[in-house]
Length: 379
Image 1 (tube, one colour):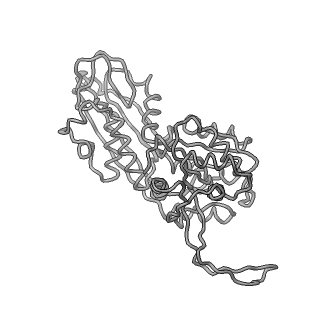
Image 2: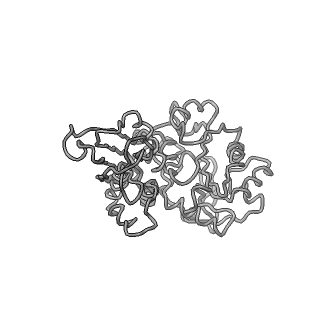
Image 3: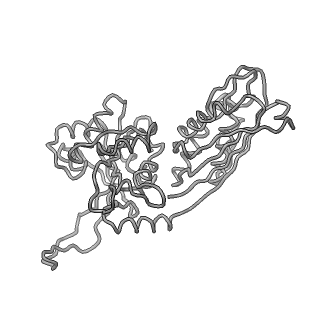
């Protein structure tokens, strides 16, 4: 998959979705206890910078649900206007690739995202589609009036991927009224590669689609649980790294890497849930390149494997066991940093601490222990 540092994802969710019925726009309605848009955003965690385009009336709700995790942009009068607004916010962001996705397609898979981004290595634009296999009719007044050939016809999906400068120029030059961004690209003379779409990548449009989405969630549910445990001894120093946060202390932690005991436990928990071994398997301590390495490398790697296999982090619970330093003042910042590195919602990660009541090596302040439990859900 393309480098997330150079990739942006624009999720278009500024419409009102009146055909779907209900009292609120379809992107805010829940399936499986979570809004459609929240599921869509979660599908792109770790893939790049996420920009969500919302109706101006929905900005307050968007801030409440996604603050700090995505960039929010107000939509325009049309879909093309909304996408162009989002593209303009990325002009100085160092982005080389952009994916544009419908907010009402919550079941996009990491494999499909990867196919689109990989195709941009050899084409200026790429989009997923499914070949039309059903017979096609024309009709009027409730009756069939004729047939139409299906050769060469495809059902378009998103995300539609583009090299950033090309699609920005194409949108700036387009007069408006395009059905999607591929139409804008074609009008600018860009070649658009077709990659294989997925039947499950449905766009929620009509009332019955919500029932179908609920069934899909039940059919595809796959829950994995893992745990991790790690210990590091104290050594000379003036701070410790715990869950990605530098904490001042009279000692440091001894280890081959930066000895972030909390992050190591969480990383091993994710590997365990995936039946993928532990940190030592992926980053052998015998390999000198990992000496003194920052532990966020390990956690990001474990989270990336989970995403590649189609799993999202449902929740993680990390417990640090020590007498000192005091963890409470830093716990929220630690949880946020773990969430950032793992590409997860901050409210799905907990960091807390306990002591061993002065018993054992932690009670004697000889080191710190950590344990972590995670639940991964394929959805």
